[in-house]
Picture 1 (cartoon, rainbow over the protein chains, first blue to last red):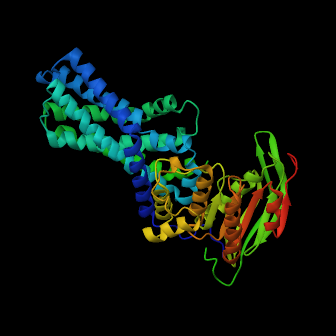
Picture 2 (picture 1 turned 180 degrees about the vertical axis):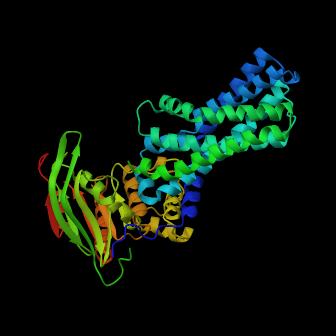
Picture 3 (picture 1 turned 60 degrees about the horizontal axis):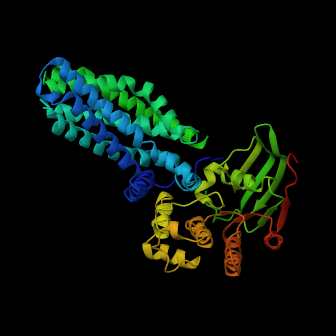
Length: 235
Length: 215
């Protein structure tokens, strides 16, 4: 009998250990948090100075602009912070310890959990800033929250696997955004469309198609990441 | 792989070659080692001692040849054997923002071990870090960092212990600690040491001398 798979430690215990370790380090260094918060605040303040209380207007063009600006702020703030989970392991040369002690899938799931948490904080902050600075009125808060959740899940899943791919490369920060943009463009376009519907309040029925595509896209991306991660991590 | 059974654990490598770009590190390396034995890999700088240990740990793949760990009917690649491998190496760093205890707690949990804080503190004390467990690793001296690497490598009582430059930052007490660890490892499994220190050749049952590049 030949076997290539020894009994591996419980996957979720290991994933949770990775997530807890990363959160602890992030709370002590605040690198990703600071980068994302600064970008989100700067963008929101700059937009509000130039465009004023855009949310007061119910004009379709104004609603579209708000939805686009919201996702632009989320996307670029995420690009500033979410790559850190893997880049830090390379820069501090802890990657060998992680590879030796943790099953690959647990590494991906742990890092994904951290990025989901960071993205949830970022989306909450950006929404609050847009509401406060541009008087954004969300006509359908439930639909809005669901769009941010599903879109955020897709964004976190994609950025986690891309961060793993670029972590070993030179010029990794620029490469991260360059690789992420085309991969996330379809998700962002659909997320903007559904966010427009949520802001304008034109009804759930109009949003269902977009939501389904958004969910399918996020799910497909996560499954592909789960399948590809070990190859990326070990190469 | 259960290596506590009747069948001894064996490491067998055949026709192993490693090349970086067009530069061959070595070719046609072959040998075997079994539980209870210690192999010392020796050679000048740049002859691939650390690379060989990375191949045995599964952190790198050979360009050619095979490396297998066998135990009775079971046969595993180094990568699949990782849950049973402990590695101490200069390039393997710890999380500087965490304390020694937090580093150890992370590695134990990531390996799926249910270790109490008391047991982990005992492990740190065993490598000479008692009373320093709650200090951030960033404040540690190079000798203390090496002691912590031993704690991390031994937390799961590995069947395979790989030591690269095992005493490079150690004083005499540190050398004695490594001596004790290697003696204990003989009861548990196999040990491979990569070193240039002539005194450390005595640890080995066998000495593998890797030559100049390409040999």
